[in-house]
Image (tube, rainbow, N blue to C red; front, side):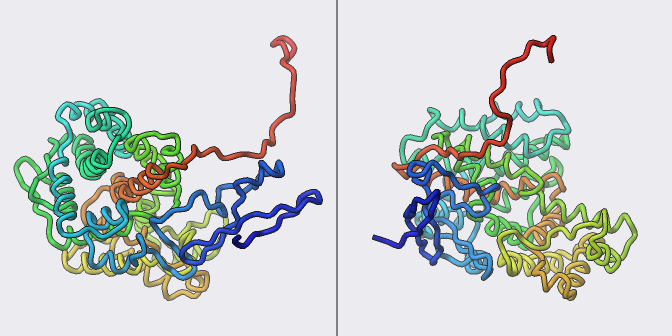
Length: 429
């Protein structure tokens, strides 16, 4: 028998199993506590609750470690494509050349959305947010891709995963084109994942857009870095929805909605908004940093610095910083906002106030810079995050689908409302 923890309640001791993860993480299993004692645990916001056992992603926030299926993110960002990283996350192993080529062919063959879906884009108001369009279109896509609501075989899952992963780029680019009242651009069979997206975003009827190698490389790396990040808000939402045996498309659409929230997927856009605010105010970076440190009423926040999980430097930030620097240098981008970002980064990294509090630039700070340099508009930033995170959502959905013992998620609560009351006629209220 393994280690146990003892909990004493009202004079009665309960032994609770201790679970140890692959990397030495320890947890107390309280799944039977209510049945045995009548008590539940209260952890508002699930900040100290393990909602599942998962073999997909490992994070050590104190040490600044992120691994997909055991592979360090530093190695994957340097050596893997986004498609290869997606296959690793979804199926658990790096693909062989034959597996990689087969899945790439599936992506190419399933990149175009059905023609009768095109009219849906015109049904959205012109001001509709691209994330609203993406969520709705992913749900609509299920009716075209699957013969029934549920996936019935491994082959059907592979096809659905490829179709969803490939078509989400097309949906995103089409939403952007529809918003601008421009013709929707079809994907090309001969382009890679990142190149195809940039082609669909920026090609005009009178001018084919050919993405530069630098732009495609930077976007590919950014997508790899965002592909999964353990049980964050959107991934936990995907698992919550999937636990009801909702299909892959419905679960992914729910993940899009969760990611849309400004506290989750909106951080990279908030970085650009902060830079625009600094520029519009005419304040210097030194003056802005001083206001942040003052903590006075109404003082601004330094967006894109620090992370809830990482108590060290975000390992993704180290990688993407180099990619951002290389992209700006090679593209010879002239943008005062990006110059301001570099100045702000240098000021914060040289200031003990931020360094001592481990408020280092995170992945959102640099991804905002990259997206800005690529010409991606601000309201598409969260969409780019969703495209990148989709492999992790698919992998987590599959992990639950493959678990025969999976039960529907059903958190408990502590009720703090009124006690029992009797109904009162309206004339007596």
